[in-house]
Each structure stands twice: as C-alpha cells, then as structure tokens.
Image 1 (spheres, rainbow, N blue to C red):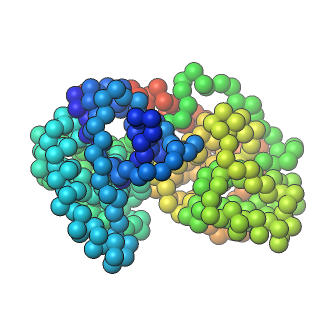
Image 2 (cartoon, helix red, strand yellow):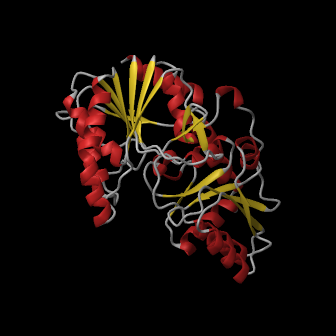
Image 3 (cartoon, rainbow, N blue to C red):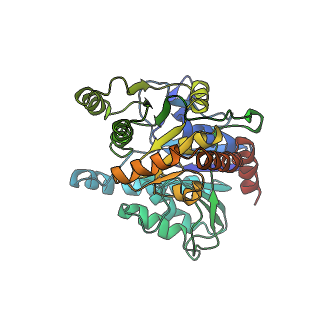
Length: 372
C-alpha cells in the first residue's frame, strides 16, 4: 500500500531522515507500521533539529516539498494565489499514485487536500481533524469550509473522518476518535489523595494567551485568599512566561506559584500522581492530552468548556468544568475540596474512563481503519 499524507506541519531533513513536530510524527509512525510506501506532501524548511522534532520511522518515504502559505494579510494572499496551481498539481499527483489518502486537518494544506480528494471518489481515505469539531464554536472560515467538505458525503466519498468528541446529527463518515499517551502495561494502582496537606495544582502546556495560564494563577490565588494551603506548578514554555513572572512578583505569589519549564514524559507521569488538580482554562482545544493524562493518574482536571472537554469530563462527573468567572469557579473548587467523598468519586470515574484510551487500543483502531 502507498500511503499519502497531506499536512501543513513544517518538516526538516536531517541525516537522510524527515522530521516534524514530535506528537504528530509519533502518531503518524503508528499508521506507517502498516504501509509499504509513504508519500508526504508538506512544507520543508532548512532549520536545525530540536528536542520537539521526531523522525518518521519508515524505510520508503517520498517527500514532496511545498511552500507553506497563509491568508492572514493581503501580501500572503497574493503569494498563496501565485503558488496555488503548483500546489494543486503536486497534491493531485501524489494522490493519483497512492492507494490511501490521509489528510491532516484543520489547516491550509488540509483545505487544499479536502478539495483535491473530491477527484478520487474510489480511493480509500481518512482525515484526522485535530481541532474543535463543535459546529457552534467560533472558528476561521477556512476551518468551516474544511468541515463542510469532509462531512458532505456527496463530495467526500470513501473517507472516514476522525474527530474528537461525540456530536449529534453527524453524517455517516464522521467517526469519534481519541489519542493516547500510555500503554496497557503502564497501568498501576493510583494512590488516594487527601486534603490534609498542601493542595497541589498543575498547569501543563504552552504558555500562550490561548491556553490562559494566567487564569490558572488567578484561580489558585483566589483559593489562597480564602485561606487554603495551595501550590501551583506550571510546566511549559511560551510567550506568556514574562507576563506570569510579573504577575507572580507583583502579587507576592513567589511561595505559591512556580514556573518549572518543560519536563520529560516519565517525570510528568510522576508529577501527575503527586498532584490533586490539573487546571486547563484553554480557549480552544482538540483532544487535550494533558487532561486525559491527568485523569489516568488520578489528578482531577479543571478545564474550560471547549471542544470535546465536556464529553471527556462527563459534563462534570469526572472533573470540574470552568465557567471562567473567577469567583464562581473558586467556589466550585472549594466545594469539591471540602467534600472528600465527592472528590474521590470524581477521581475514580476519571481513572476508569481515561484508562479505556491506551496506545495499544489506538494502534488497534488505526490498523482497522487501514484495512477498511
């Protein structure tokens, strides 16, 4: 089988291998276990390899370089219009020589791929929509167009579209899916947490405005002001780091909030097991892996009502959904902290749910998709 990937992910080449953003490539390597040849159509830049890059694991990869493009301003739109004919024919040629077409959406390359795949109604196809599938959410026009094409079974034939969350009134080609971090053999007994000692809170992710780490700081600050013994550890790097440092300094939170930077997978696993709560007040998500990871290790998620998060949290049965009204959210947390039985019930439900989604199951489901 020749497997064609159309993606906006920026790649680099090093020592004869093609590399990309590690979480994406690690997932794609699961797919590539079951194919004979790979064609990747994606942007390629001459940049140095970093810790966030991972190499494809396959012996036969054909890489078709295309320019990255955007529609964010007039100049970029003109550049994109000029490059579109070449892009179209490169995608067309790659799809024509493939047995299975795989689109990575949403993104500009995903949009082009969604349009070109219409010309191949008989070929087997999959699309991974890694963003928010909620039709009521505010999204860029290009994302809405992609969703419209992918869910239209007249235009899009012989394709399974993998989306995060369970959504009503979907076409037959839309399949609820997931991603995973841990294997079956990593499951172990979770130590029960009590509230007799300092309450340990986490924020894990990119320090960006969209992830709203500042809201996590303010929420823990509010609990501190209510007399609770709390600590927030922030794991990640990003543009909001300076803003956080200033806020911590100005509000005398140096003994409460700690910026820890990036840590590896094994260290993070132990940190989840030693913490009471994870806070994720993000404005936009697909399937937030940190939420599922925290649940797997008995760390209760406190997260915003975006994308499939309410579904992941069982509408509050397996966590706490944020209203993003600071006092209201603070009181919800206090209520949970003052009720050990309620907290334990949520934790047990979270562990039970999250442990259904392992790498082993993910690999099994991918194999099924490639055989259909």
